[in-house]
Amino acid sequence: MPQDNSCCRVAYSCHRKRSSKVKKCACCWLSFVTLVSLLSLCWMYICLVMFNDRDDVNWRGFEVLKRWVNWFMAMVIISAVLTVYCVLLLLFALFQVALREPLNLHWLHKIFLFFGVIFITFGVTGISLKWPQEWLTVPVSLQATAPFLQFGAVGALTLLSLFVFQGFHTAKGKWSKFLIAVVFVVLSAAIFLCPLIIESPCLIEWTDLPEKPKLIGHRGAPMLAPENTMMSFERSITCGVIAFETDVQLSKERIPFLMHDQKKGFLKRTTNVKDKFPDEDFSHSANLTWEELQRLNAGESFLKTDPFRSVSQLSEEEKETARNQTIPSLDQLLVLAKQHNISVIFDLYSPNQENDTVDIVNTILSSGIDQSLILWLPPAGREYVNTTAPGFIQVYNNKSELLNKGGNHLNVKYSNLRTKEIREFRSSNISVNLWVVNERWLFSLLWCAGASSVTTNSCHLLKDLEEPDWVMAPRKYTIIWITVDIVSIMIMTGLYIFYRKTHCFSHRKGKEKKREITSAWNEKELSPFLATR
Ligand SMILES: *[C@@H]1O[C@H](CO)[C@@H](O)[C@H](O)[C@H]1NC(C)=O
Ligand SMILES: *[C@@H]1O[C@H](CO)[C@@H](O)[C@H](O)[C@H]1NC(C)=O
Ligand SMILES: *[C@@H]1O[C@H](CO)[C@@H](O)[C@H](O)[C@H]1NC(C)=O
Ligand SMILES: *[C@@H]1O[C@H](CO)[C@@H](O)[C@H](O)[C@H]1NC(C)=O
Ligand SMILES: *[C@@H]1O[C@H](CO)[C@@H](O)[C@H](O)[C@H]1NC(C)=O
Image 1 (cartoon, rainbow, N blue to C red):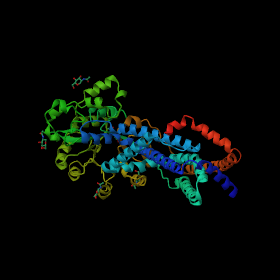
Image 2 (tube, rainbow, N blue to C red):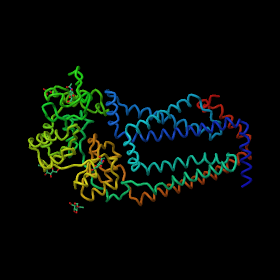
Image 3 (cartoon, rainbow, N blue to C red):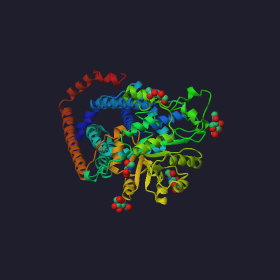
Image 4 (cartoon, protein in one colour):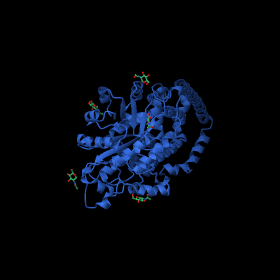
């Protein structure tokens, strides 16, 4: 269309007067703003999906610093501010481009953007170095979000197509035009067709939806009461948990008690050991007698640090009870479990597991609890346990070990099993428990996948969930995404035709007028926001 082309060239020439160097620079900055915005959106997404494991981040921070700080919350807030800022900047920049204004970023914005890039780089490096397995959460989350992200991407693409058409028209030379066209077509095809590779356990018929996973209280109900205290386990009973999850260690006189942290400063996070024994630095559970452990308060630190930002939901009476908690013994927990017919599953982190196993098994057997209520997890003393207490249910935390030993209870981190594996295990009657599942989206996903049970911090939230967040029949999804794609293509075609018409029309007939409008815009508020001049 030579006629159109010439008209567009005329249109371009009227902007040519501005130095091409400035224009090139502005184009670079626009690309930079776009890039940082996309980066910050991705980073925000990562933060949000890792929210499920926020307690883990803060605990790791505590391990290093020996001080409780809600690192995760700080990171989320900074990331959210950064994301909102970048996206606003991008919107204004695009707006300005749409008005054919040169983009002169203020130096402050440039500095902030660089700060953002550095912040995200630090975050990504930190996770990769200290917590690499957490990256697996991202593909898991995509199973829940991908269909909706695709709809969002199609919407964004449709809007942005207008800028692409503009760029295409104003581009100099055949090669730049060709490049813009190819990149746009490839990107659009990828976005339009990616549902072909989207897999989600929730893309199933309602009739195929498995039974709701049972709940296991992770150290009780740690959002409603101090972790690993009797109050916490009692609260979890009201959620209808099928098992108490806890951690066992042995005191000096070999009484098993419940405490998660180990090694140096193992009592510091959850008890007032600093006040009671200011001069001692305990590094091993056997450093203290049961009588000494009993003197520690295991509830005040929960009220003080508010690790889940949930203390405000507690009544005054509950706070009073929380303030009065002590470290429980395994025996106390077994009494409660026996009374309510609830199972017990625990971790044993001791360096001398086989030795501890003997004392723990003795404690369990002498408590008189039904052996089938004990879910035995520690791998070290499994042989001994099998002969001494054959009624215990053997739970494996390793797929290959489970298959080797012919077990039928598996307990692994939620990101370590793919949907296909969960379904295979379940169809061979192997029960699958996944830890630690706190957020609804994750619980919904694992519900669709068919997990038998999950270990959770938030049993009070998950117990009320009556159905997964979403379930869609595969055929219905296919119809929806194809429709969305077609509508988008139609809108884009319309925009393209509209753009070409108005673009050339305005320059053929109203070149002068247009220039007036543009210079009028120069004076408006928009420019000072972005421009130094
Ligand atoms: C605690 O126990 C460890 C290992 O048994 C021992 O090395 C350390 O000296 C003990 N510390 C105290 C304060 O008793
Ligand atoms: C706190 O515990 C002590 C001893 O265990 C008990 O005497 C007291 O009544 C408890 N207070 C509350 C408010 O539960
Ligand atoms: C305990 O619960 C199990 C199922 O979890 C059930 O089969 C059993 O009958 C219950 N026992 C008692 C004494 O209620
Ligand atoms: C599971 O056990 C096998 C040997 O039985 C071992 O090679 C593998 O490293 C274990 N995997 C994990 C995650 O512990
Ligand atoms: C699983 O259990 C069901 C019911 O208890 C039984 O019908 C089925 O044959 C079992 N499947 C396998 C693979 O053992």
